[in-house]
Length: 266
Image (cartoon, helix red, strand yellow):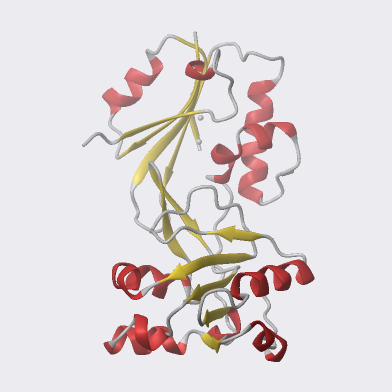
C-alpha cells in the first residue's frame, strides 16, 4: 500500500482543483523528497514532523501545480500572490503557538493544513458519563426525536445526526451527537464504537479516506425502541450501561418528567 496521501484542496473549483494538493508521506526517504522537488510546480512548500502519538516521521506538502508545505525543510518558486510564502510561514508559526486567527481567509481556505501544526492537548471529560450520555427508548411515535431537538434548541446546541455506522464525515464540532433508531442487530456491530463515543477520552474517528482525532466535547444521545439491556449483553453491556442515563418514554407526556442533567463540555 502506498505511503503517500494526496488530497485535493476542497475549496478549489472544478477548473483549478487539480492544481492544488496536500501531500502526506509517512517515513519519507530522500528519493521521495527529491521527487517532490522535481514536480512541475508553480509553488511548493514541504514541512516535516513526527506524529506525537505514534512517533511516525512524516512530511506534509502544499503544492500549487504548473505545485506544496509543514516544520519547513524546503521551499522554492515564486508564490502565486505577493507575500504568500511569508504569510504561510508566519501562520504556521502562529498555529504552533496557538495564536492563529481561525477567522482569516487563508486559514479558512487551508484549515486542514494549518490544523496539523496546532498543538494537541487532550481533553478528558471529568464529569459523570451518565450526565453526558443519554439513551432514550420506547415505542415509535412517542416524541423521542422531538424531545432531543427541543433540548438542543433550548441550549443553542447544534446536532450532528450520525448514521448508525463507524463514519464521521462532515462532523463539525456539533455539541450533540445523535444516533436514532438503534436496534439490537446494529448494536452488535457497533459495540466498540458505542463504547468509544460514550467514554471520557479522545478517540480516532474514521472518515472516508482517513481518520480524525475527536475529543469528547459533545453530548452523545441515542434514541431507540429498545432498552440498553435489550441491545447489549455481557461485560460490554455492563460497561455501556454505566455510561448512559437511560430514559424510558412510553408516551409524549413522559417527556414532561425528564430533567436533562447539567454537563460541562469545555
